Image (cartoon, rainbow, N blue to C red; front, top):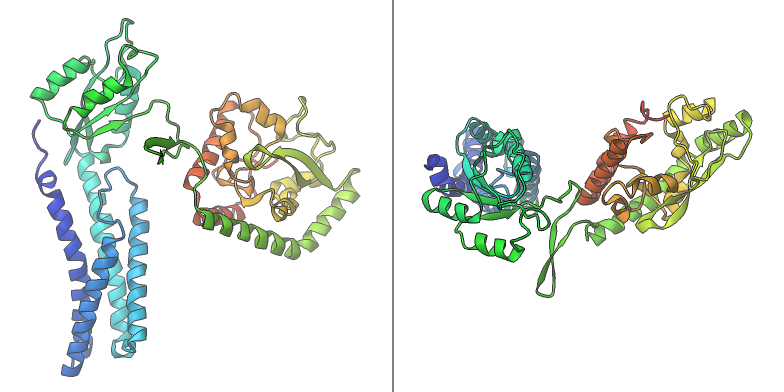
Length: 473
């Protein structure tokens, strides 16, 4: 197989050129704007040159630490945009601080500085974001592609190839696939060609063909039971290609963080991030936020309590056992919206449905606007819940679905929340089917995997602007 052109041959050189070009362009642009706008008296000329040199050095140091020059073939361009903005803001902030402490800010035209700031951001977006988007389009049309080979059962090879076809911007093409011989007949998917054999055939194929990467999956209890994992690893370690393991058992919400137990490598599949300072900050936000909201909303809370007492018999608050942080039970508080008070762990517990006759007229309004959830601010204040996190279910609902959905209880590595990622993505309300509950759990596990204070703030904003939901009944 032939090389796919100049981009492959000179990709590292182009990357190095870009590392030098960015600081040179933005420092040169600043000098041009400054001289053009002021005419540059001789006394000012040296100052502008010093400023240009300072921009050159600061931008080179900041940009090279911003991870914007790495390959984004298999990374999201949203991640690149975020890193570009962070690097740009960091660079601007450092330069402003230098100008402030050296008392030279008055020597530069405000107009020139503003124009240069906008142009520098435009340069980054055009070269890095726009350039990579053009490269993705080029790959989708077949350019700058990489040839990969796959070893594993037919079903996993089919799923792997489907991902390559569904994401043509990756520029990865399946050159061939191989599998361990099986005594059982293989039902071959139509989307891939027949297997070219096993490991011995793969070795011969590599002697007369070229590829860029090897991907493999391993089924110890299926077709590869006569090959140990160590034998498979030894074989692929004897090649001169990058090798990637594709675990067939992987799920979307897994973290796959690498850790060490002495000299033993281990993978963390599920678990909260070890950002202790951020976790403490999250608790402070919960504590302060719930206290302020309880005080500010106290007239509304008292009004709702009075209306519930006047419109239907029974207590104002509905208390129910729920599974909380690390599976510990706690009593959740809600405004009563029904004519019944089901404990939640009863075998006859029934979720609220659309037009549920148990829901009172006032309760329907409270549910529509999520006002029945406001007493949970008390749970947040007590430390049993958080403002943002996986929504807690009635105990019987958890017990019903946890045997059917993998990693169901892993969502409780975080405190349950008044709102969560699943709710703002539309998985709110009744979970009448296994698929709807599985989608909610998948979103909860993604929240756990990707958690940050910024994500919490984003979820809270989306919750505020989407209080009235058609799934709330």
